[in-house]
Length: 360
Image (cartoon, rainbow, N blue to C red):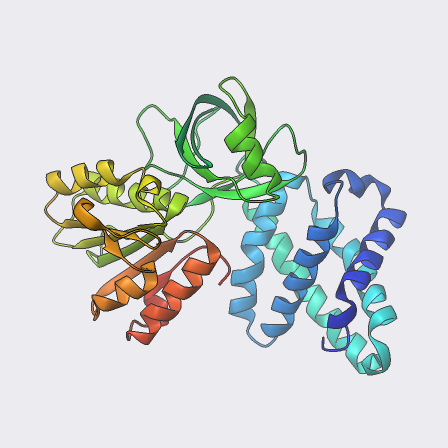
């Protein structure tokens, strides 16, 4: 891996060139711009190498990926085709360290990876490849942040805390993950909270271009940041910016099932007060549910008379440690999630009690 890493982009470009030359019908599965795909592929291969001696971890990583491939129209046979192309790309760019032994080890790993991906793909066969979802409401909730209400074309199963990959009509074959902003509703409608990010094709389209009547595609619900309602564990929730969506969904689901003696502590972070667009809603939930405590946190403004705490969200949460007996759920910008997870581990929270669905 060390030999390939400096030329990873070229190696992955060669891989895709081989795939499209030998199997031109597969090109339609990929977006027009391939730079991100090359990065994602090499990152996935690095993860496979890292977990090569841990089959359970490898399956935990690849099975969800295989399930996600369902929305692209991937078939099990495609994995075998990709295997050979990837071996040849790595051989070309592997330098002096690539020999028969390295090739044999690579082939064994890729064969196992293909099998696990195919198993994940097969697990998803009982569900649609995707759902069509009409935008029925769109509102600007904060600066560069929109709340979209969607009506799926058929029943859409999910749990609070989960997310779905979303494709817009303006960027075909470009899918981005967004968490659901509310617990499952009786009317079947879904909500997404989207923050437009610089150069974010999909996020900017959803925030600034989408309107009622537009139709999106949704992949199947994914993610393990869910609540076990039989366990009664205390919850510590960190939500930053639009990441407050799944946190509110978790609180709503706990309220619907009954708190069963658990405590739920929510720290809601934003740069400025205007970004706390769900604070009033959370405070109303806290008034109705004494097991819920809500603490707003501002990083660029003094909390002042609004009752908000001042500082970076992870640092503020650490001030309230210890968090013995709590399970943490983190959602928000990747940097915040990384810092929050690290802060909680420094406070003594076991790694297995810190949940998030973003790569950290």
